[in-house]
Image (cartoon, rainbow, N blue to C red; front, side, top):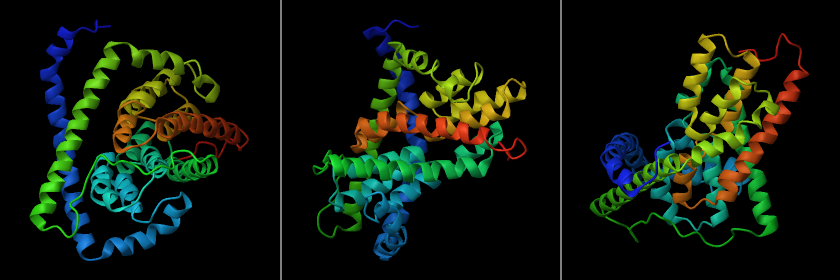
Length: 319
């Protein structure tokens, strides 16, 4: 482990700058079209129509229908795409901290599904069950979280948003300038998160989290081969964990049930550091977007493993 010093941090800045640019370019490629499409929909009055279509699901988890577009964008693109729509729509809504935490939780559990489900499929996990688990898992968790927040009267204060909007009816130029500011703000957040990730790795915090979770996962249907890989995926993301599982599957080291359990766990709970920090930047509370999400995921997988064991072997883990 590299010793954490000021000199090491200085030496890593050029690499960090390159990583920030590469990540930001991906962000710009995704978010600029999303922002433009959102503006067009808004000008055509279709945001209201889409909100009405998504309103039943969003109301179920205590959110206004407009935020359905944020979650839908996250599902089909990335968290950054969802953040771009959030930056455009949220300043016009009167949101509480609890509502933002609920929205962030939905985005964290179900996002980038076209890409991440394809990784799960390549790893050997059945596509439809994992997709349903993530979408309905997000709805169930967010419904529970919203109910708890309301019944316990926590996080009900008005949220202070990171992003802002031009008051009144802005011209296209004013709107464009504001969106550029919001994108620059997201890029600054990305740089800060990459720096924090590097510091956490150098300080051994990520390794500590891995050691903390590794002994727990064998109780959730994962053996000695699957548990460490699952921990990597939970911390670093499905891209990392899925790639490792694909390699282990090619070597014949993991059984079908372990692959399914591992990808199901990662599907509900991954990107524990980087993705969580992104949602903290939006205003989500760690109690909901991190600790509650981990607990919910462990409970769901614990129940799921035992339910699947009760199924006839011929239909268990079928793809």
